[in-house]
Image 1 (tube, rainbow, N blue to C red):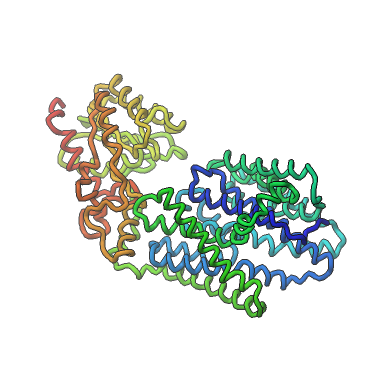
Image 2 (cartoon, rainbow, N blue to C red; image 1 turned 180 degrees about the horizontal axis):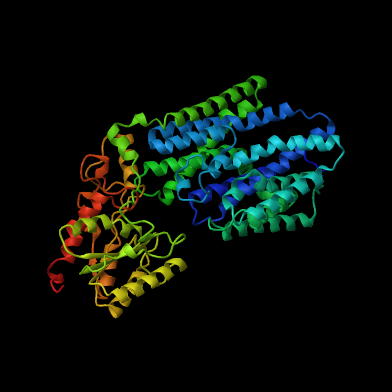
Length: 620
């Protein structure tokens, strides 16, 4: 059995590296795309240290299971209680009722060390909505504590039966890794969050503690440590949120960590990782990990625009300060002061109280009574695609690729051929209303998340090629193109060129509608929560800048298309239209970018109707 009881300062330095990688990934995901592997480093370190302590005491016959859990409580609970309480308090002030209710669920789950299970039931770690969950990062704490509920009992049984602890950790680790490989393909979220699929990382550290005898010096330590550091660095540089993980790739940072842990005599470990600044970073790594993510989430809620790099740096600096304060004045005194049994009981009671508070938030529906009825109605708005012909003429290409026969108003002319993504589908209520006073037909060929682009993703490319052939065969009088346009203007330019070459249609491109960074209902409610006032009828708060219209107009009009600015119709010098009346139904957008039916009718009546049926259309 190895020298598990010896304090190794380089381990604290490695902790500092691990937490820094995670923090930098969360703050600057494009710069540190694989920084999330810092959690895997933590798992290996934890398995190594705690297993060494338990195995030593079990082998000596002095292991106290209740005492072990009490020490874990004094180590984990103090900082966690403070952060959970702060998250709930800030959420009451800043979060919408549904989101706050979800925070209550996450708080109760975190207090019960089952956040990973709760999050697994909701969505994936890298999903867009996950970025709005202040307690998302506590999934790793759940896995770690679930492991330590089970692992000491296994060690006790194996020691009493005279079985090899090293072989036990090796066998269980391989079994966990195999299960992880089995699930990563068809059940990636489960593979990410389940303790049985991530335990191999802790077992790897345990196997090192149980089976490796450390040497104090030797050139092989320098080689091992350098190889481990390079392996960790490569995973940070090469992995990103699109990388299937954990899977076999998780073995890379695990092996890298094992190589560094097993080389305390290496120059990099003695001089760099064991330096005072690195050790200090390791000592506050746990509260730093707890604080950084809620701060990033809540500051993003407060800010009307995206956080700048400087602002993210300041937030990380604040999390470092709070981590030091938490460690110095809360965690350290409770862990090492007197009256430890009393403190342990108090911590358990506090954790039960915070779990109860989370349950109360859930039972009260996120304290929706904070909001007056008018604002509460806005909070309950959902994107309503009932008038968009979803599943018939607005397709989800992962489920269906054939358009319904009813997508074309056969026998009606002139024909408006509507082509685009779901934002184009949201124009249909306005076009239908226009049909009440004008004679024309509608052909709707829209697909969710697929802008008109012949060079886009494979499923969209195939769909757009098929729609182009339909347009050529139908030869409509007008092709109306609209989408959540991105940076690639060459794609829509290619569509315009193909239509001009193969049809006689007027090509009309509708520019992007206003994009509300957090969704218009959220902007309305956040403004009320912060300032106790309803959003004005026009606002610039939280809406994107109009940077696309000018380049789109210049590029597309050269090709013979007509460009219409939706922004000009819905925005002016006072801001973009937020509501057409005082009620929730009067909002112009139901989310980030989809127009409500009333806004669609307004847009078609004030802009599209005039252009399509104005003087240039008299030839019809």
